[in-house]
Image 1 (cartoon, protein in one colour):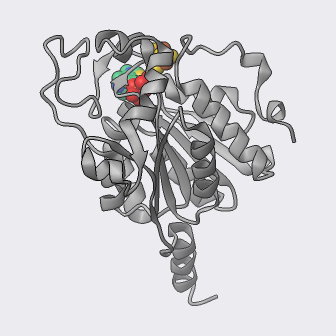
Image 2 (cartoon, helix red, strand yellow):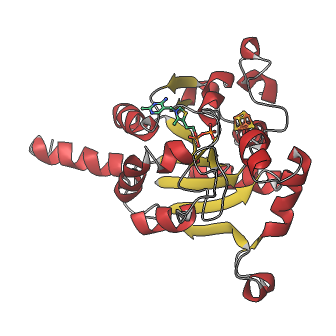
Length: 267
Ligand SMILES: Cc1ncc(C[n+]2csc(CCOP(=O)(O)OP(=O)(O)O)c2C)c(N)n1
Ligand code: SF4
């Protein structure tokens, strides 16, 4: 299948601002699915609310556009009912880790097979630039006009500590790498998390004087480095890119089937 066969052309042009990173995430995801040779019918995309969450309207998979922060809860129900389907859950940083933070850690703990994509633009884009748990100390937002005093989560550390069995990070500048991580995450039989740094020039960029969208994309080259690089030792502020966790542990739906078997007396 060609990439265009995976999209719903009738919903274009998309709603994202010019220069928003979320379109590059969509591009990476479509390429990942196309390279894996997946059929549209074997994929379910479940999203919450946010600019990032709007991605589910543009893909011609089975799709559910649900409630802000609750995508993983809906996705868990879908996966338990239809474990043979591939479930992909794209979320903004607010969707995933503010209102949805509790669902995130428990989905990771259960190791239910689905791919959580955290499109991290460090802000609530859709609602006008309020600070999120990823904005970090010193970040400017409409709700932090004198700068935020909240420390930020590290998505990778949080996912790892909560038990996710595949955890990776890339950026929209590193689109080929992001595509590769998405492919591996989709194939992984467990809860996989791919954090993709994605710029919001309209709110985060303007408020934090980050320049144009192109400047913001370019900056991902300078503020990130491969895991364990020499540059990281010299500059601990650099954000690492790569695969942090990749391990096999019992998957939740398979374990649930065993419970059903026990409940039915081993039949
Ligand atoms: C229960 C509930 N609370 C709040 C909102 C308002 N709301 C919609 S999107 C959003 C945050 C969006 O930020 P993020 O998830 O980071 O995604 P982005 O728009 O930046 O891609 C909020 C607070 C809502 N729709 N539902
Ligand atoms: S407000 Fe920000 S996150 Fe939302 S579409 Fe515009 S640039 Fe993208």
